[in-house]
Figure 1: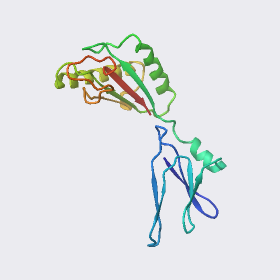
Figure 2: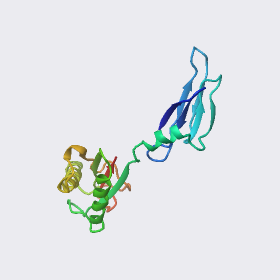
Figure 3: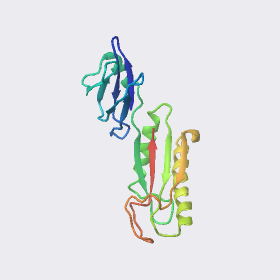
Figure 4: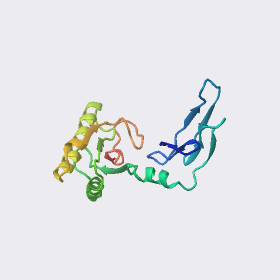
Length: 185
């Protein structure tokens, strides 16, 4: 995440961690046809702009105006995983309490967006697994809607066996692959 800040003498930019806690890179290109660029690749780095060469250093303490900008950022997404019994849309007993955690997370976020993605293991045909993963995702979406959340903030998609958590050979039952992932933003 990049925040560009304007100060009295020089502008600066701060590279913050992304929503997964990692960092990207930003290239600062010289203006006015000058050759050269500076790469900022460390999260929590500040680059002061306006000099001959950008000055890069750790952020340290944020100035009050910067802290206000950062405090207004939305919280990072939260991910939940629900597991299913083989061949159907019934959750495992251990997954049932996770639904309450999802409900609470959605409730505390104004303007929440919920992405529900269903997955299967490799037992069955690709077509059957695509359909089953979609049914699992829709089942969770319907469950959340029954708890009072608008369908318009949620989307459900099935990925079948294309994104296995643990790779297996074909026709291998795997409890960790039979899942629905819910991301609340």
